[in-house]
Image (cartoon, rainbow, N blue to C red; front, side):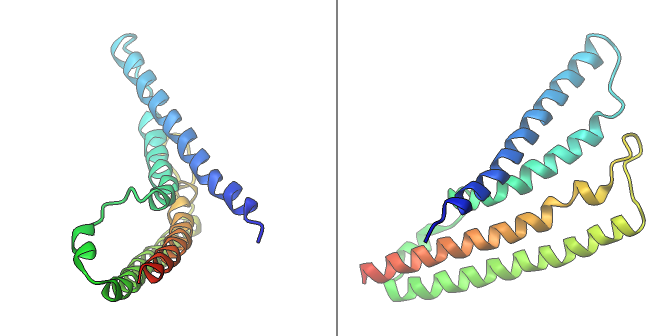
Length: 161
């Protein structure tokens, strides 16, 4: 099975998160310089920072799943026998899927309301729906990533038995 397109697709969210992080750092740094050195603060700085923080967090979240950088309590899992570990893996995957599904459904509803009522930022007039679009997209990506990792872990546990 050719999975090169999957790897390229996975790099898109990382690239977006990196660009958003660089933009966030740059806007914040320039905002400090212009506020305290030139006494000319940016009126739009907070709106850009809000958008970039959301994009960094949610586009970077799938990568955190891939690299196992999310907080986990492995001690209890490691103490369990292999058969119990398999059950725990499935239960954890189901809980994560339900939580991400819940966030997905309600974030889509929330974004639809934003688009329906044309909610925009006050200074730059950016659509709030576009700013929050990474939330449901990242939920889908995180679900796929988590289930792919869970399947791999289940295979490892099965081989170790």
